[in-house]
Length: 321
Image (cartoon, rainbow, N blue to C red; front, side, top):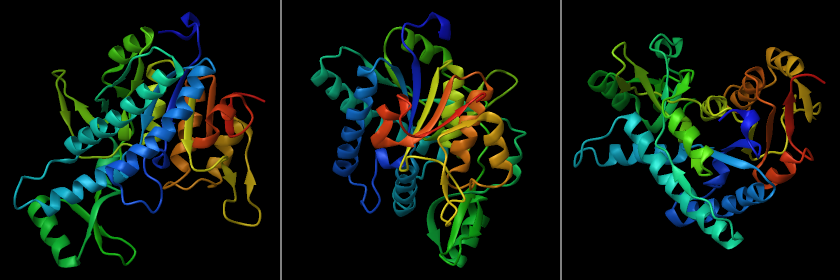
């Protein structure tokens, strides 16, 4: 649905890990559901303020737990590959968001359907990430067990800062959402869609048009930008555990960023202010979204989502000053 044909602005809301699991928690179903229920209240506030919403989310702890369960039960049931594990978490987390958001909408007297789309995200077989796996996944192993797994399963494993050996997989760039047309139609009909969870299930498109899954992890924020671009969203809102992106983070010269032009943010990136394992992909997602025609791209804390859309807090990237 083209932007100019909408009655309301469309925001893709990317939920960080704290929306589902808080630091220090074990990850029980009750803990995760309670966190999602609190998150659902914030999302309903955005809907009350006049926004249509598409939701995406992370899945790091959840897919990690499934991989650990795979290994612990490997002698009893066959382990599943990573693309299937990712699909499992889309159903798991999608169910919790669907139910919690649906309940909050009922309380608010808002009649809207909520649906989860198991989402495949197309990547390129030629992506350089496949030649250089860097994303750690799953449990830690001793050196002997790691070498055995590398020989038996063909895994790439690396020693991780003295904590043991861990599997690493490629993290390719997302190109497009396979279920784009379906998501667009659902949004057009007023449905609140949960899509591209955990960065989506990475797949390759063959020359025949057939699709095949690959064992990789797509960055959830870059996949969120891809989703926002594909549905022609007006706004990309990435919610995390901080209110602002900062320069010189963790130093006495730390400075919070509020409204930043595209050109300036690109310069900050080149200066190395945003680490690849934390704020780097989030900032890159904002920049890509604005470069691709998006109107507003914001990073803010989960608790301040409505205020961020009102322009009262958060870091926003704009085309020009």
